Image (cartoon, rainbow, N blue to C red; front, side, top):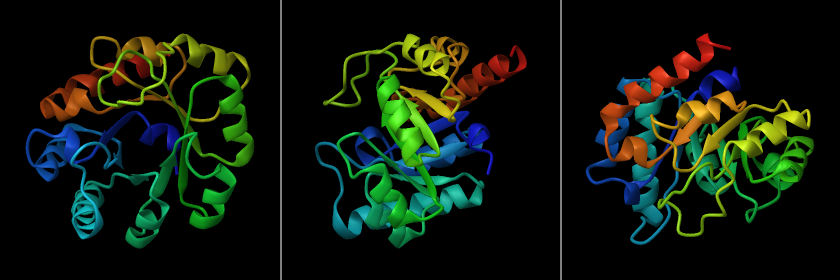
Length: 213
């Protein structure tokens, strides 16, 4: 699997991020050209139990119809129950080594915030890393300090060539900064959730970057 290709326009979403039906939002985003999707069901009034599983299954069906990898945030048990394509974990979750043992050869992504975390993720067996936050974001209440695209340059300068996606406050107006810093793609939540048709604009930015490198 070409991870770099799938990271190009990485959409992250849960029911709490949407102002309308999340299945409709994902269908619009998939039609617009997203290349990977992560189910992230967190925050106030998020779904639990059967409702959470049912939504995840419905979103997975959309991804399969469009041949888009379906990734589950944090919840390894849900990912295994759905036979998802992979799992994405943060620094406060189970270790990369433990998750890898549970999921086998499925895709494993890890959130990192600086060079040392990136090195540890690579050495532990991550398939890709999510680096951020790039810019200010209101999506996560527990968001770390803004890193900016410079942290991606630092990671690349350290010789870490692991597939990498920038995340946090990215939109069509600033995405090129992240890509030029050395990211393989951009991960967005609000930029698409609030306006799914903007997917096409974001995809255009990634195309421009790829053609100029």
